[in-house]
Amino acid sequence: MSASRQQDPAAKQKTLAWLRTVSGEFATATIKKLDETLPWYGSMPPGRRSAVGLVAQAGITSFISWFDDPRSTPWIAADVFGAAPRELLRSVSLQQTLQLIRVTCEVVEDRVKDGDSYLREAILLYSREIAFAAADVYARAAEARGLWDARLEALVVDSILSGEYDDELPSRIAALGWHGHGEVSVLVGTAPRMLDVDVLRRTARHLDADVLIGVQGSRLVLVIGRADDERDETDTATHARPSFTDIAAALEPGFGDGPLVLGHEVPGLVDASGSAKAALAGFAVARAWRNAPRPALADDLLPERALAGDPVARATLVNRIYRPLKAHSSELLTTLWCYLDNGRSLEATARELFVHPNTVRYRLKRVTDVIGWDATGAREALILQSALILGSISDPDAPSGRPKSHVQPDATKRAAAAPRLVAAPRPKKHGPTS
Image (cartoon, rainbow, N blue to C red; front, side, top):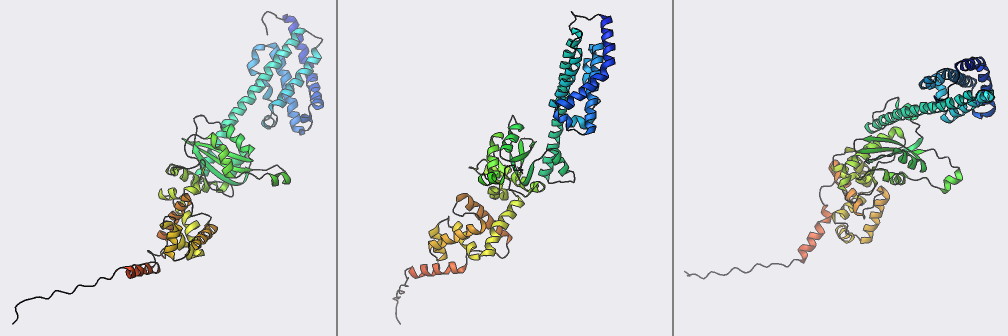
């Protein structure tokens, strides 16, 4: 309070005695007005309503102590909120706390409106102090919770990247407020100088997704999950949910310069380690693809990953390309190999196989139907040729070299077309005769 205006000590002691006498009435009137004016208070369980009443009574008692000695201001928050149980502090928001302070102050002001102006000014000043103290309490709690959440989120992302799961992982994920359900994919890129995680989370939320964010050195890792779709069935039918590629493209501005790789889709968060390993392996070799898009799919970097020694990439190429083609038709496998060996020339492949070029086109279309890759594209041709090489290395039954049926007719034709060489008669020797 202002030092220029001091209350008479005797009058102050009289006011203090009166306040201590009516403090119980203030608390009762406050509880009654809370029940009449605040709907959230009436809907609370009896135990929590009682705890709110204790907080209101502690506020009135603290005001009386502060009125007696204004230098006790730093202890206001501890005096008022120390009476509240921990679960109440977690269930009552800052807005509700300020409403509680306002109602309490209104009750006290209404009882002293005809009294000393000095007391009314003290109530206004105290209400300001207690409001700032409440805001400080909630700000400190939010800061502590934010730091705790950041550490917990980093721990969860590290567990996903390493694949070391334990029984506590689901509870840790739930504590983070993870809204993802169903499919999950991992996105790996370069961390920007100024990382704004709120922008990343807001962007994902607009696309019906949720993210876990982890920074490891210069790498930024995002675990993307499907969030619950609250739209009705009609709206969902007319608005298809975005794919993980679309979500990654929308999140791309939040990453720094350099490659950006999206791992394959997995059924759930507990399987995210496989997507993370693929994304990390692709991120390590993405610079080898000169025209790599942002984001690039980890499965589109299978050749580079295999050359770098990634056993998962090698097994993926063999199991998804070589073996299905061999099991489906050796004719398709041979046609694809000849087509790639002949520089993707339909005519050269047709001549080698003694078929029409349209037959080669048909077989290549069948190859696409079986494995999903189109051999006529330059990038996909590289993937397919890498799979054939790795498959033949791992397959003891793979043919070694070109079949004779493909070589002998050409050799016969060349021999028939070559000009015959007739040996010249040996010249006779002319010597002395006997």
